Length: 235
Image (tube, rainbow, N blue to C red; front, side, top):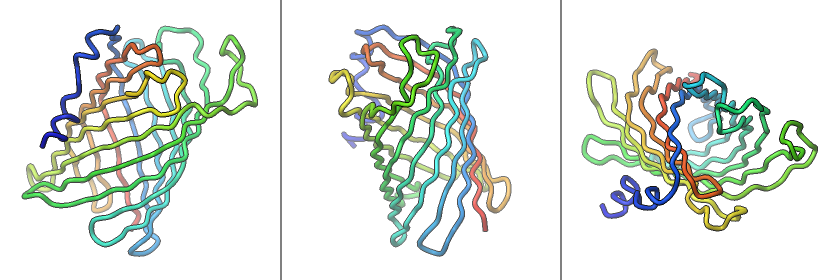
């Protein structure tokens, strides 16, 4: 319980000592899973994210990964993602989308606790960014390793009304090998929402995501996010 308390309630006193910029966003995503057999499946994801005020685009993301299921509790996967990142400042007129490449590996452990299903996900990823010119208005051919990132998420799903489930999770994201060695905490995220079945193989996760993101200068983005995700499994 002490470890869970740490992830649910980080050291907010650290945030109070830095400049915090508040932002609102909407995140949309679509997940498509295709089973190969009882032990293997592949999954693809498409995401888009935008600011609310002003209403400008922030990110597109595309991810694919291959999964190996072991028993009833374990899921191992590996894959890669392409992110197209525009500046974190929604007011800047330079909206150049900079490609970021992220190979990653996951381990997920699932278990039941009373009426809850608890998921633990450990993810490691490498982050490579395309280079730009000095004004950051043109891409170059260079590709640079930005940092390594390690992520731990604990998630609970529980029944609510009929087939609708509640979903809560919290995730800590830590940097390694970054330019500023003091920028260890990349993000802390907390989500609460609903998992709503639409068809036998299609559901929607809708909820509120709150994210603290530490910047390389050790200031923070404090983001309130409406998250809408469609989860589709080919049968």
